[in-house]
Image (cartoon, rainbow, N blue to C red; front, side, top):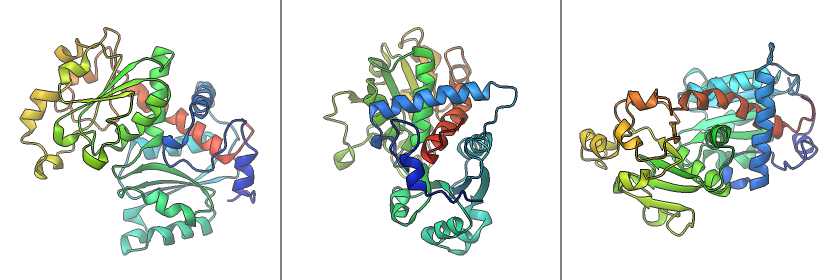
Amino acid sequence: MTTGVDRTEAASSGPVGWHHRHLLDVDALTRPELELVMRTTDEMREILARQIPKVPALRGTSVTILFYEASTRTRVSFEVAAKNLSADVVNFTAQASSISKGESLIDTINTVEALGADIIVMRHPYSGAPCHALPYVKANLINAGDGWHAHPTQALLDLFTIIQHKNTIEGLKVVIIGDIKHSRVAHSNIWSLTRMGAQVTLCGPTTLLPHGLDRPYDNYPNVDICTDVERALKDADVVMALRLQKERMASGVLPSLREFIGDYQLDSERLKLARPDALVMHPGPMNEEVEITRAVAHGPQSVILEQVANGVAVRMALLYLLSGSKEL
């Protein structure tokens, strides 16, 4: 059910300091806006701590979750977030809709808007799909991950998780290890972390690092790129391992899984190179004993399950901010 409220008017009259109708990536957010998302997430965590974790902020608003890729964490957390804000939620998956019969992205968006979607949360396997769809969208649009390009809500929940433990991002050394080149999580994290003052080190095999025209970070003052994992980990405050997609070996960018494990796996001995209170993170899903050992993934420095839990609060915050609601 739609509210009948013009979404542009709603967004412009919403929370002070927020001026966006859509979220395609975090590079569009200023530092004050990132800080606003963090403060709003804190408010949402307070709501989630209540006996009944529900508020009427999005009552009468229809949220459509439009996923062209399989997902557990992101899809479910968006659904829980929307329901906690009292929104009506519709789930569309490619396999169970006309998408599987060849319906185009724009036709599908037109259809879900005709059915009353006020906010569309979209995941798509092709980089740039949300940007392509934007001119045709009247609803608020949230990118829930597109190809290798961006995953803004993951970057924001990572940011929030770090702040919970470190109180600040300013001056922290954050190391991201693994397949940087093909990781939408890494790309969004680079923007949000550096904008908040972190020093980011990207580490992995040469073939899995950005290069040529795809390597925009070489001259970026807060980003270091290296292939030496021991050097990268030295004095790190936060260490994030990325999932190794096994198809990378089939495409010839890795000689063997054994070599990757030997050179880049985050294990207990390597973690000792980081600061004693360093956080261990992973966006999931994990290949345990590949990019990260089970002992580290479930060890005392791991905040991986906290990342998952914080995803609900962050996505509640974004749905609230984008909707233009003033009620909590």
